[in-house]
Length: 276
Length: 312
Image 1 (cartoon, chains in turn yellow, purple):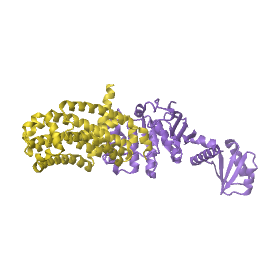
Image 2 (cartoon, helix red, strand yellow; image 1 turned 135 degrees about the horizontal axis):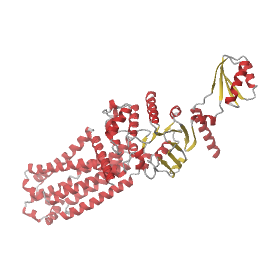
Image 3 (tube, helix red, strand yellow; image 1 turned 90 degrees about the vertical axis):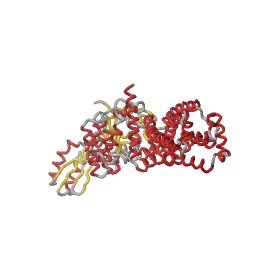
Image 4 (cartoon, one colour; image 1 turned 45 degrees about the horizontal axis):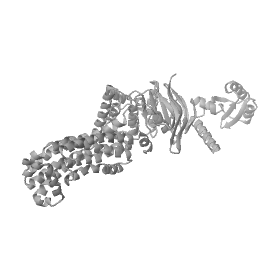
């Protein structure tokens, strides 16, 4: 049993290493993985800065975001001591971990969708399926291979974002931003969402016959993840610490089932026979 | 002699199409079985079932004591599969490609990879990207890949297809070496020369198994043995003398050759020679007419087609 576990671990690490070699041996892929998160982070900072500087809090109050802010205040009354402009800044900064989900989602759509299709195109899938690797090991390894770097880079970007908050002169708000919700979102929800996004990408890749179709399927599958950001912005639901922990628990179970579904959907026979 | 591959009415259907029907075949340990058939005969489907990649619709197989449809992962520890168009990760080097596949097995991956790269003559190119390899080199690398875990049974699907003559020869030599090492090889091909050169037995297959035997037995089974007598000059007197012999069943002339069908090939030959010499025929040589595997194959395929027509 222990030997089996060690063998499984060895195989998954093997898949991850190979996937990384393939990604980083391609300059375009490497540039995409590194530059996209930086652009997303910079864009968030610039947008918040410009909104505060040129639109102003009074304008924001009259928008849908004003309603979101109202609901936000009922959950976090300590923010009432802040000026309107600072409240909005905290509101935006606090939502950043959800906005950061764009990084794993976009990387997943770009890479995970290729993972199985590429094996089909390069005719490596059949020799691979003739090795003792199990389907779940293959899919899990491929999903992790994408999720791990995108997660690391997401965390790195959150560090940059905090530096950005200081740089735009809002360091006095950090105490309100870096609370339990921020850390749960960043270190529990983002990894779980990332894995989910990559798993959905791998599923679409195993069902599609070309990268374009795989990407289309993946976009439809992963976009609802972004709804969580929208729900927060409108203030329709404001996540408390308990709610975030429950969400993380549900996501953990969902990930397990999605992996199970991915294995069921990965029909070796039709993939090998129907692929020409 | 122990059996390494055995199939029992192995059948595969894809919707309404029967790709393989009631395949019953045995392959002994250390034997090379040539699996001959035209394109679309179901050779690759048969190999995929035997290698545990796809499941049969009916029947079953036992490979190295394991049922491929029940324990594919355990089977994959002891078999090697060379697919018809073996693919590689073109951006990775030969060694990286090999290591990736080797690490799925419970072996000392690094040393086994290096050993096999050397064996296949790819050591000097081990750090080059596979994308820069010729087709022949890729085929050798594919062989190295399927040998890395020292499998007992090898399934080779068209190993020389699309290779230039020199590369094909190299691959054939490697297969011969594998036979010398005592491996059991299931070789699918439609290259008849290759089958004759490499295989102990030949199975002719077209959806169903038509025949399986050694090339020599197939010849004897399908064709009457004939003797060819090469003369300095063939004339009517000699032909008539040969025809008058009661054990001669048929005579035909081909230039300076007489092609003669005898009742008893070994027993009647000396008397035939004596009769030609007595008719003042000057004999240059006497030898047996060899039927090529191609003739055997084409005869079998033609027979099968005629039977198919009759059944319709």
